[in-house]
Image 1 (cartoon, rainbow, N blue to C red):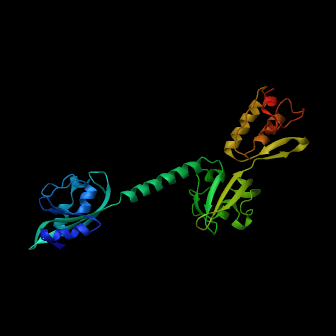
Image 2 (cartoon, one colour; image 1 turned 90 degrees about the vertical axis):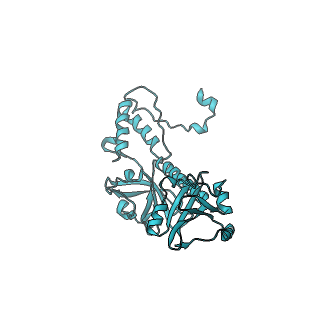
Image 3 (tube, helix red, strand yellow; image 1 turned 120 degrees about the vertical axis):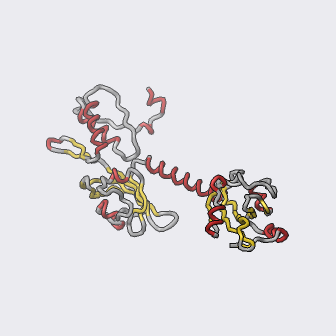
Length: 298
């Protein structure tokens, strides 16, 4: 609660970093300091204060008058589309309400920074969710503090969320069981889908304490009875791929297999050859990168 100040004393407010407005009870501008005019643009004493801020349509002045207490409003837009943080305090003279003192600060840079951080976070999430591998961010004790969208699918998680779960709960492995930092290796993990072979890579967080673990399930091919080959997998998506393989292996067509490195493209090619009528003939692997382009086309 403030006592009404004589107009001659208002000039003191010109030295304040924040914008200051004195508004009478009829919503007329009594005083605007230099910073207020810098933030709001042209402000004339005696004019109505309506339209200066986005909250003018639901002005809290009546609330301030009735409660005799100040209010704070965060992220208010000015008529020039600046973002400000505003406080409004009641003014009294002789016990009678005479108006309000508004103090506000331009926080546009802070708001824009927060919006940029949000955009960057959304961008990172989109990139991570586009990765076919499971990506887990772990703290020093191996607890999951973040993960991409594919992590739960790859790990066949039975939990509604794996955030907060320890690595051992979802893979049966602890941090000590993983390969050295920066070295990708194949190890076996236990998930609700059973015991599976996984290619894993552990990296240290550059900032903060913790680790980033990326892994994908490696389909395995085994020689069965009578030298028969079979692929063992419990991944629903890979099982659908195998169904397609069985269909195309009987056709005399060219097959293009695409995918990330280490996802089993060569494995599928061998399996298609094994299921095809040409299984008794040699399976020849060619490194196209080692052959000149003109010769390869010929």
